[in-house]
Structures are given as structure tokens and as C-alpha cells.
Amino acid sequence: MSSPIVYQLGNLPIKDHVFSPDHSLLAVTKDNTVEIYQVNQSNLGVKPKLFTTLAGHDKTVTSVDISFDGTRILTCSQDRNALVWEYDSAAGEYKPTLVLLRISRAATVCKWSPDGQKFAVGSSDRIIAVCYYEQENNWWVSKHLKKPLKSTITSLSWHHNGVLLASGSTDGHVRVFSAFIKGLDEKPEPTPWGSKLPFQTLCGDFINETGAWIHDVAFSPDGNSLAFVSHDSSVGIIYPDGEGLPPRSIINVKTNYLPFKTLVYLTNNKIVVGGHNCNLIVFEGDENDWKETRVIESQKDLTKETPAAGDDDEEEISSHQALNMFKQMDLKGRLNKPSPGGNGKVLSTTHQNTIASIREFSGNQVSTSGIDGKIVIFRV
Amino acid sequence: MPSLYSFSSETLAELRKFRFGSARISTMQAAIYTIDTTSYEIKKENDEPVVSVEDLIEELPDNSPRYIVLSYPYKLPDGRLKTPLVLLYWIPPTSSQGSRMLYAAAVEEFREKAGVSKLIKVEDEDDFEDLEEQL
Image 1 (cartoon, rainbow over the protein chains, first blue to last red):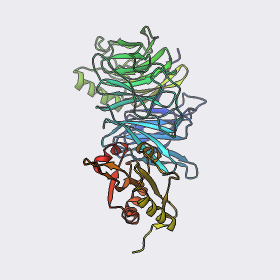
Image 2 (cartoon, rainbow over the protein chains, first blue to last red):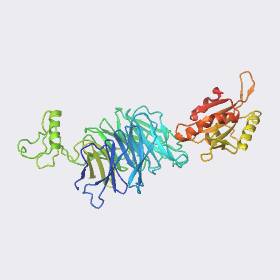
Image 3 (cartoon, one colour):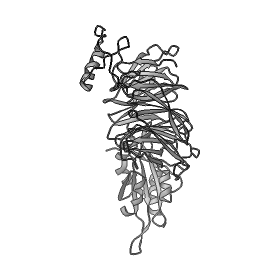
Image 4 (cartoon, rainbow over the protein chains, first blue to last red):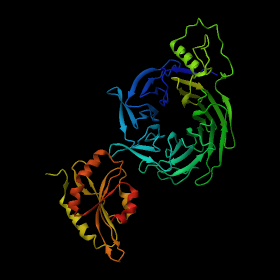
């Protein structure tokens, strides 16, 4: 298996990242801004070059997404706003358009619909704002999905028909809504989630037995199942049967790893998850059963192994590693010295801190971003 | 003070006709008025009269304000038929700030021209349900 491609883009945590559909651009969230890098497509190993910085938000940017045609970038932030950025080639820069979401708390996640005509923003205000561009008024209108949301929305996922929207929330519920906009969407084909779907219809409401926070949800590529990861270190997969009927099956795979924060479907039967364990795990299965099949990187359990001591005193340690060393001493009461000759890493995995977001890069590759400021492309 | 908004004589005649004509009809009638964004002229939007609350909700745009002159006949508890004429000011929260200001400035003038005494502000579809109590 080829080694992962690592881009160390500064040291600030990268909450969310997205590659443009043709992989020419990489957008990463950095505090209050979003940095756009140009990717060297002929040689992915070369570190991408910083192209521009989108500075328009007053508070931390929580999520970034690029529409499927690559022309519009969507960002949302804790300052309760969402901005749609479009490239102005005459000025050579991205121009933002403010979207009035009408929410009174932070926006936590934003996703374009598959056709790029509308987008959904989840917020801590217990509201999902579905926004679309209205031609007559020449501005973005936001419609609210309110009932029966009673808690912060942490994650969103669009069904490929552009009408069904799945949301994960801190009350432990995974809900599927219809975000059908009259006049913009055509009536969708019936799906196992339901057939008649006016705006704000609740097509499904699922909870796992622990009621732990849901960190991420995703529809399968064919739209017939829904997967979620929650803070009780489990992965859940739901197969619906039809409107108003109980689901065909709900499978919950419990693990002993640290909680997962993010997941992505590679095929209808394969999911890759990652999170606080700093590593990627592959799960495979179907509506009868799902199992963990592979761990992408071998991981040493550092609580069991004592680190090698003594002979690396003469090694030069950079200030970043030194800072980490003292932090570890403070935190754990002992030293995890960066391994000699190893590239200053303390953990045995590529990511040195929680994996915050994961996206599909190509058929068998996924890209991840972490709180350690790295973007890594893994081969699965 | 000269007004920004204009009414064509046709519109005024129509309004007058609606006012007197609908009093005799025992079913509800509604006329939707909009402000032209370039000429600032207030004119009627629907060609055929709207005869039910559901049709009215269908006709109204989701994200733009409108004025509705409504004649709503209903029976009082003592049996008398009353047909009040009211002005509904439809103003959804998703409308743009510019159009909200445009319609807000003209609402008083329109109310005068239409000869209506009662004004009801309607912000979304659910407000239509307690329309009868408000009348």
C-alpha cells in the first residue's frame, strides 16, 4: 500500500477541508478565514501553493464546501452567517455574497445540494436553514427547518436526489427531512424514505441506544441507507423500508476505539471512519450485518509502551516538538519524546491529533484534515 | 408631499368596483396587488378573482410582500351576514429588505385609495388560519 500524501499546512487546526471536483483547488478552514491552495495535479506529492485567503467572517469558520461544478465556495461560521464566494476573474479574487440565515446562534455545518442550486446550513439554534437563490428578488432566501429539532445540529448530508436531507444532532437523533423547494426542485422519484414530500416533512427519526451526540451522518451513494457515527464510539447504519414503516434494519457496530468524528461512504457497502483515535477504520457490510474490516495504519498503544529514552538527547528538536514535549509532560506526567530519526512524530499514526473531517478523494482514496493542521490523502 | 407611488385610473376604478360589488356576493373574493419595481405603480396581479383562502395562499409568492383586498362574508352569531372589506398586508420574513421598505411606505396610501378601514398583517401561511377571529 502506498504511503499517504501529507500536506502540513501550518499548525492551526483544520476543522473542515474540501477539494474542488477537479482537484485543482483545496480549501481549508483556518480560524476566521478559509485558505485556498492550488494543488499540483500532476504531482500530488508536492505541497500545494497558497492561492488566496477568504477573509469575510468575524468568528471561527466551522465548515466549507464547494459546489459540484466547482464555481461556488460556501463557508459558514460561528458569527451566524454564511457566505457564498464566487470567483471574479476580472478582479482576480473571490467575491463574497452574504446570505441572511436569520439564526441567532453559530452555524455549525454547511453543505451544497448535489445540483448546486441550494445549500443547507445547520446551526446551534436548532434550525437548519435551506437556502436558494431567488431570481426575482436577486438574493439568497433562507427557509427554516424547525420542527422537531430541539438541539444543535452537528452534521448534514444530502441525498443524491437533492430533496432529502439527513441531519445529526446533539440530542442523539438522526433525522431525515425533505428540503423540497417549490419552483426550484422537480418532484423526486419515490424512495424508501417516502414519496410525497412537501417542505419540512420528517421522513425518519432515529436514535441509538446511548443517545450520545451524533458527530457525522452520510447517505450511501445509492441513497437507500444512512450511516452515522456517534460519541459512544459506535457506527450505525440504517436501512429504511418505506414511508411510515419501521426500518428494515438498523445496525450498530460498537468499537473500543476513541469516538469517531467523521465518516465517508466509498461504496454502498464500505465506510471509512476517523476521529479522536487519529486513525482511519474501514467498515464493510450490507443490510444484514456490518463489521470492521481494516485499520488503515498500524497504531501503537502508547499507554502500554514506554518510549525509548536516553540516546536521543543530542538530537536537535525543533521548537514545535519541544512545545509538544512540555505539553505531554504537563498532561501525562511523563515524556513521549519524539522518536529519533522519525520525523518529530509522537503518535505512530500520520495524524498527530484528532481527524476532524474526511472526504472522498477518488475511488480508492480519501482525504482527511486534522486538528494537527495536516491534510492527508490515504489510499484505502 | 408628492408620492413616489402611482395608481392608474383603471386600478382606482377596479378598486371601487370591487368594494361595492363584493358586498353583494356571499362568497369570499380577493384581489392581489403588487408594486411594479421600475415604475412604482401599484397594480392588480391576478386576472381572475380569487375565491378561497387556499387559492389565495397558492397565488401569493413565498418571498415577496403583497397587498390583498379581501371581502370575507361570514355569519354573525345572531344570524346576520356581514361582509367586511379588509386589507391584508402579506409580508413574509424571507422577503428582501428593499422590497419590505417599498411596500411598508405605500401601505397607508393604498389603504386610503382602496377605501378600507381594517388592516391585517400576515407573515406566513399559518396566520391565515385565525383570519376569521381577527375580522
